[in-house]
Image 1 (cartoon, rainbow, N blue to C red):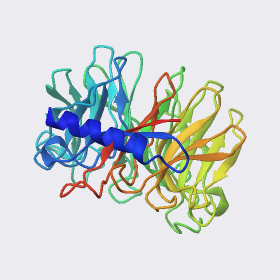
Image 2 (cartoon, helix red, strand yellow; image 1 turned 30 degrees about the vertical axis):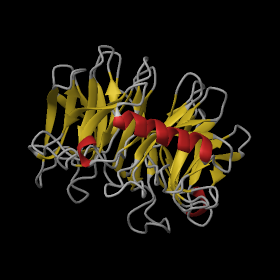
Image 3 (cartoon, one colour; image 1 turned 180 degrees about the vertical axis):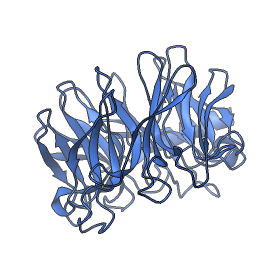
Length: 392
């Protein structure tokens, strides 16, 4: 009861006594205020049909992170606590199947290079695949999140493994079938196709997947000379890769961020954390015909270093977060209109509203936006961040 009262007090404080300069309604739904209930969420939340939110934290529990549920009254339940041997440091969003099971990735595990896992609605974990560490070229260190097709196969990316042209490998795209067998769908070379892919991937109706590689491509780009500024790619069901854009740095952008948005017309939207204007990052669009266009270059005042993916409202408006920038330098939530005009929906202050929103946003059917912050300077000693809602 005490925690519920505290949550209600925080919500009222955020929503009414300190509205943002942009006059949006901001509600801190849950504060991570003890190590036991998790700390420092980095992945986006997942919302089910009943309005419950699910997510992961990179710390808390016994120090290796948790999977949490926040019901539609704002009450948190820790569904699972990681202990290293069963995974740890889960920094990515979850997905859910029709039966209510949750699926995710964790950086740690018994093989030393991450796991894929399933969590029942009651919180019972099943490890689906163990990634093995070492100097071999097996896929290792899953990144960014997962996507599930209509048959129940799971696809994702790994930072390493696959090809000897990079130290420890240039990264892979994999598919875990329903029988639990891991198939390598593509091995990056570190050249034209990029290296160190970072999920989650997005999938079209034909089974093609789209994603970003944060390095490789044009090795002459000024931001990362010799390494490359990254690529946007498409991989067909037969494993053929098509590079949709190679980042050149500067005004073109550099270091694309995970979580592409594929709209109903076949256009892709994404963000780069570097390049643009004064290295503040960009939002870009790749049209169905392959045309690349930078639709916004951040100024710093309206955000810096966009991250965590984008979400759309179906009317052409795109929403996201930046981990830095804004009037306080601690990140913003933004709306990018079809005209290209950017509106700052909320500027984070590091108070009870949190700071450094790494995960991007999700949107419900009413247009409300939900996300997480990594830090919260007022909550001592944890400073564990929060889960928030914005009502534009």
